Amino acid sequence: MTVVIAAINGKGGAGKTTALMNIAGEYALRGGHVAMIDMDARNNLMKWWSDCQEKDAQPEGIEVYSHKTARGLERWMEESSGVFDYVLIDTPGEDTSIVDPVIASANLVISPIQPSKREVLGAIDSFENVLRVNDVLGRNCRHGVLRTRITVTVRHAELYRKIRPIIEDKVGTYLFRTEVFERNIYKDIHNGIGTLQMQEVTEAIAKARRETQALVGEVDEMLTTEVAAGRAA
Ligand SMILES: Nc1ncnc2c1ncn2[C@@H]1O[C@H](COP(=O)(O)OP(=O)(O)OP(=O)(O)O)[C@@H](O)[C@H]1O
Ligand SMILES: [Mg+2]
Image (cartoon, rainbow, N blue to C red; front, side, top):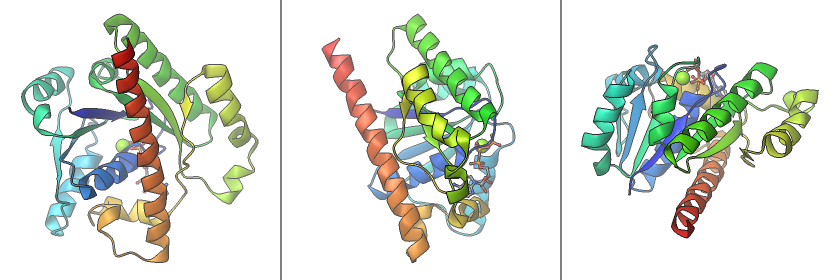
């Protein structure tokens, strides 16, 4: 079975592309066959991929494709997704019409946020879109909010403390326990040096690796719950 994970937040650049690169790297390391789809017109993922090629640092087990339309995505999903264990879809940081078709093919939507009102609202919008598409199609796509670029200072911010009550209690979607910290390595991987998992393990890299493993562990858990819920229904 192919698992489809999309990163969506129509407001902001909190780390959709970075999160998908790290998740892809983790699955590839475990021997998974991973496809990444760049649906963002700015082509951040495709640029990373060609930079990796130039530096002879393309990760094994990952392939990157570019599709900018719903039709392109649907056709690719029909024809090619079956040969992959994981399909990770990267979307633009703005509201677009491709969001609904992406949700329609996803098992899980991750909405990264930094503690900013705009991004929190964007994540709530994404959750509402997931609920709406699920309702129309009778599907059970999951949704989770991922806190990213966390620093000690950020943790003292008032909005940071409000995130859990807002997301879990008021909105009622899942908040990942794992937080993605602000780390230089997450910037560096954008320069075409391959995935996090390909870097020589220093203390700093080891921390990022543990963080990513915890995140993927949570993702796996959510996806198992989805399958279980689907079977029970
Ligand atoms: N946890 C992090 N620590 C440090 N830097 C980060 C982190 N996450 C992202 N960044 C930096 O922030 C930039 C934006 O992140 P990213 O491209 O992943 O966001 P995005 O949500 O995909 O943005 P967009 O909506 O513009 O596509 C990246 O170039 C990266 O350098
Ligand atoms: Mg991006």
